[in-house]
Amino acid sequence: MKHQKPSKPYWEMTKAELAAATAEFDQEFIGDTFHELSPEDMAQWERARRKRGRPVKGRGAQMIAVSLERGLLARSDRHARKLGLTRSALIARGLEAVLNHRHKE
Image 1 (spheres, rainbow, N blue to C red):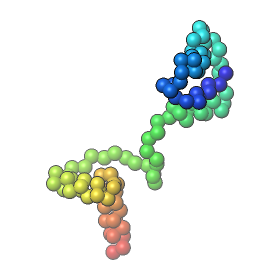
Image 2 (cartoon, helix red, strand yellow):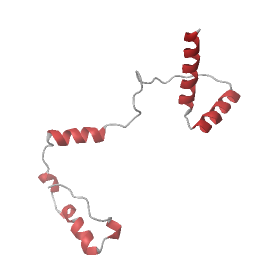
Image 3 (tube, one colour):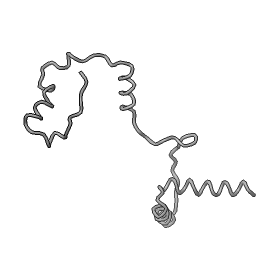
Image 4 (cartoon, rainbow, N blue to C red):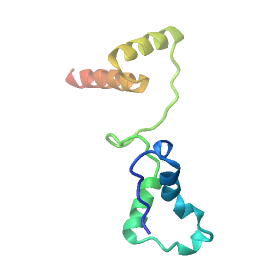
């Protein structure tokens, strides 16, 4: 028995529509009707269960601790916000710029 999404939200249903939409939950021992998941259902369950996380860029990311002077950090955060970047993205851009400049010399 596949669960079908109701045609409209529960809070907009009449009493009769709500009773019909939720009738399956009134059965006793409904757990007895369960079965093992098919390979397709299992794959879908695993995808849903997985944490979303960040997409992998390059070889992945590693968290590090860096000490910065508070004024510099505040200025960099303001600049990152103006550019629509995260602090990490701004720092990564700066490192890339420095490293690429060093290789050109």
